[in-house]
Amino acid sequence: MPIKTCIFDAYGTLFDVNAAARLAAAEPGRDALAAVWPQVARDWRLKQLQYTWLRAVAGQHCDFWQVTQDGLDWAMEAAGLDDVELRERLLALYWELPAYAEVPDMLAELNARGLQAGILSNGSPDMLAGAVESAGLGEFISASLSVETVGVFKPHASVYDLVEAHYGCARDEVLFVSSNGWDAAGASGYGFTTAWVNRAGEPMDRLYAKPHHVLTDLTSIPDLT
View 1: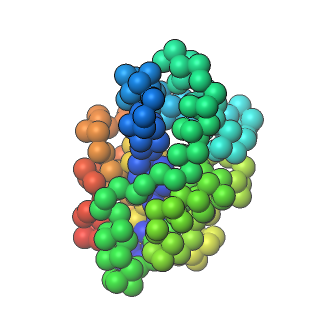
View 2: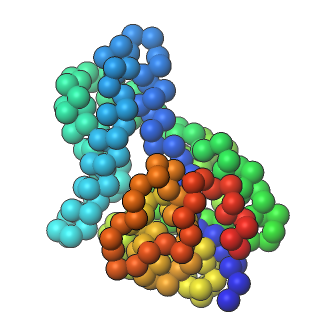
View 3: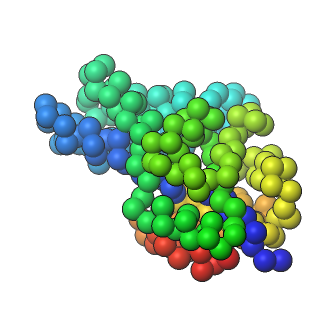
C-alpha cells in the first residue's frame, strides 16, 4: 500500500535534545556547565530513555516530564554540578527545544504532497504542545499522539496502536520515523514502514526487527513516500 501518513518521534528526531545543555552552556556565568555540557546532554538523554524502559517493564508508569527531571538530576550529579538555578534553567530550555534545521522544509514538502504528518511520542501532551509551538511547526503537524493515552512508554505495541486508531489507516500505509534505533525497530516489528535517522552514525541495534531505511537526517523523508 502507498504511504499516506508520516509519523515522527519527537525528541531527538524533530527536536534537538542536546540544545538545552548547549544553549545554557553558552550563557554568561555558566563556566562549570560549559566544561562538561556534552557529557551532561549525553547522560541526560540516556537516563531519560533508560528510565522509560525500566518503568515500562516494572509497570511503574509516570509522565515523561518526571523521567526528564530524574534523568537531569542523575546527569548533573554525575558531572559534579550542584546548582538549583542551573537545573531550573535547563528544564525551562527543554520546553523550548529547537527543531533540526531541515525539519520545516521537510514537513512542508510532505504537506504539499498531500501527506499527513503527525507525532507519536513518549512526551506528555503539554510537553509536545509546547515543543511544537516553540519550534513553529503547528501548521504542519496534524496530531501529537502521546503515550499518556495508554499509560506505558514505547516500544509497547499499544503505543503504536494509537496511530491506526487516530488516523484510521492500515499499518503498511504508515511511514514511522525515529532517531532511536530501538524505536524504529519496534515500529518495524509492529508493521510500519520505518526510517531510522541515525545522526550519530551508531551501529544497528540487535533486536527482533530492523528499520527499513537508515538516514543521516530528515531531508530525504518525502522521497520515501
